[in-house]
Image 1 (spheres, rainbow, N blue to C red):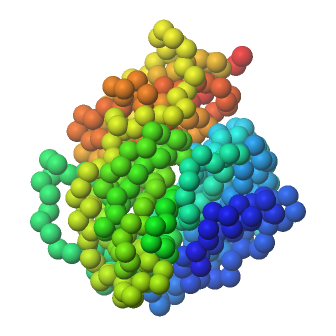
Image 2 (image 1 turned 135 degrees about the horizontal axis):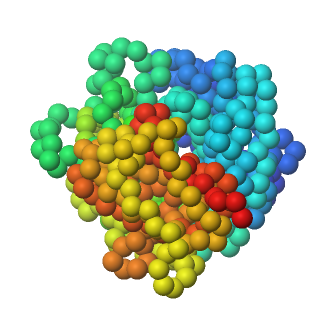
Length: 462
């Protein structure tokens, strides 16, 4: 069932943490209720209902896992229990916790063994739309992920309802790829010129899911005529970049990776893996049922959800593969996103600069763990420039920090994951070294990461 903003805040005030409400798939029983002072996450084998087909996977009781929601400045306390047959951890994507709470096995913590537990506890100082997911091997490519929302102490946006949409590529438990490829495929169309292709990965994924549901069993989001909706759109996929749009509606971008930007209205979003956008949508149609389309970038693949106007005479959902024309409309770009709260960078030139070449699945022709660390000193202003010579776009994610993308405006967006275009595309970002420790900097294509597209940002001894 849909939840209004007032209901969400009521849950937050009572529990400090809440479970994901509404629009989730039909699946195994959910994880247990929040414990005193926090939430218990149990990673375990489970089954997921994909349009009537029950498949085995791993998850935190649901796919996505239970929503964690609290306010900026609160202390988050999450008890992880591992009932998987192998080690696991949890990474808090987009947050900047103390190093020991970052959830990277062998770097920031010992992995949590099967049958064991670990308590993550730290202050969530910054508001935004974040995610949590396992960070051992390819576990993220199963169902071990969920949304993490940190509310500001004072909300400046005005809206009536909000929804979180987690976009995922899926093959766990679906072994006959060819037999089910049609469920995840968009209508036939001409293949793009390879020179113009925007592709983040190339593996076969038979399904694209929105909040754990395939196109034939789409999640439904309710709105009343005149409502303003806040959508938190998150790409949790392992190998797929997405384009997202809503038929008959435009999207006003207010946040990128959880950080506020000056509002800009577009037709569609492009999200690399690990990226998130918050958008406002005016429910300005008189009624009806409208397609929320999710198109894989650079290859066939299709997911969807449905926006239904409450009380509308129209009741039938759009055909599963109806493709909103808005997907071909104006896309948001980094250059037009202006940070509302830029990083407090000093004047002059950076203390330290790195010029990195992304080629294939290597960074400067090195593959982790046989790769040199990137040393920084606490308090430094660091600049990183990336040139991507490969044929795939690379969404690069820095743990433990937020960075500012350099754009012509001088007020580029503050992010934690940035997509570097293929074929000599370049992106530069700055960050402040204010969170000591060893931190991963890696491509958020998890196959690329497993191939070694990782470097360590290493703080020098003080």
